[in-house]
Image 1: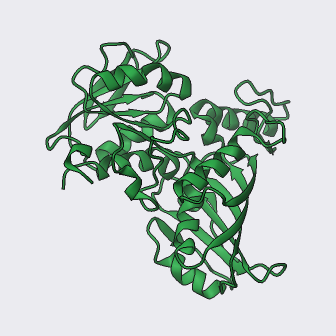
Image 2 (image 1 turned 180 degrees about the vertical axis):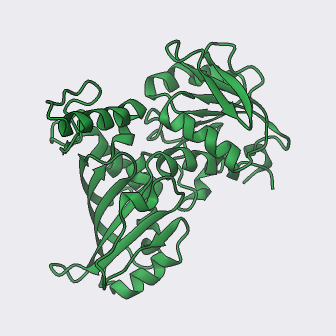
Length: 342
């Protein structure tokens, strides 16, 4: 990476846009946990959240309403406030010379905007033009599993079904799942206000808008973003995304077809040595990854790696990963760390 692509070689002035949300709060925790070099931290949010007090390294910081002056002197913006907010402030941030790492879908498919999973395509950060996109949570988890295998054999097709937790819809959806689950246990009829249907003891197909082919927006994110990250524009990939009554951490069932047979034992060895991954493979006790194994953790967990009985060139695997952490906040911060001068 060129020196002009890097952040300044000093403690940074950092702004977190969307500081009151689930991902914003996780970013604060990770910035402290990973001792990111910070001189000043500004917490920005909508008028509704302005005035909240957050604690960072033992100091209280007030969340302030984002404005044209919020980015004066800022070096790095970690944005996680939704696509409309990111689009609204993109040019303002750019005019102040800050690097923006954006967690929304607003810019992910723009040709000149890097879409990065550090363990998969770090080379994409070169010449980032001060705007870098963080991929969709399910895409990050999927590409962590696909990339090591694709280095061994060409991938022909991927079929993935996701089991997505309430955390993917934000902190309020997580709270709603807890509240409505209690309602069901108390014999009441759950009424959802955040999600379109109650998730308590229930599941439903992902509620993002459908296209003319009946694929939802979430599924198309997985298809298009995976192709871009892995530099495989013609990769055959299909997805079915489901919201399930899990508080935190997503799961995925993945079928991968290669150009020739890929023995499951070899795949397990490759994946066990891949960055960002741990294997949970206790065949004797039928014990494989669960969302509770990864909640609050950096690594994603893979298991049940087996050859597809219906296709000699295909593998099946199961994975779980924390949507808020590696699926969002951690991946964004890892990108920022890659921009720090060595």
